[in-house]
Length: 255
Image 1 (spheres, rainbow, N blue to C red):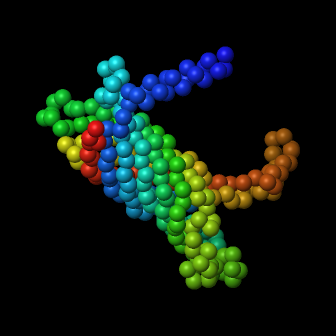
Image 2: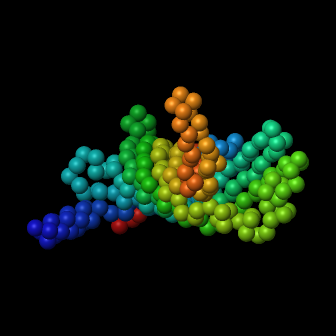
Image 3: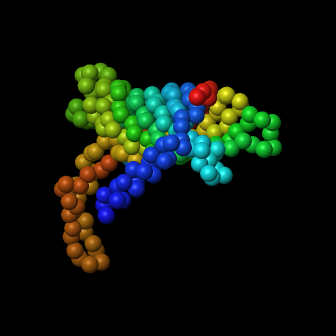
């Protein structure tokens, strides 16, 4: 039975491949707001960048009224992600501030729906798309500075660009290189020119840190019980987020 199912699945794949083809390719460049969603840090965006190319794979010969609208898009991008951050401890008169500027190689695999706008002249299209991305960290910069006038310890007074070494300034010496994300976007095409607005949402926490509540003792006055948090608790920092606007140019693939 398993062999029969395998043969059937293989036959379906061959049938789909025979009725599908790469129909167009393009390139785009974009910029927007990039930040890290970390509840423990006050953050502000940096300039995010997207630069890359793609090909569209369309099921052109399907006997389906939507066969000319549905497509898959495979791409390869160089992207810049990061954030500015700040922490303030009023009682200690202490401040911590810095930034992450990280560059990734990104591979998006998107499913899209594209149609020509009937109310406008020929050559005007609208598209919607979504899908996962795989991001691999290439290189990046980290600036992390903390100043606490009343405490001379190096853990409370440091600057990665002054007191630190080269590794202290390298982002991916301190955070994960692999990120998995999700893209949701809308695009407008005028003849061969494309304009896209999309959300790039990361799922993988950039760093893993000890939880500040490790070993804290809680006293419940209502029940009279005392509990202690687990010593192996871990706190996770935020994830990459970006809202991007891009412009590009697209050409058909001639068969």
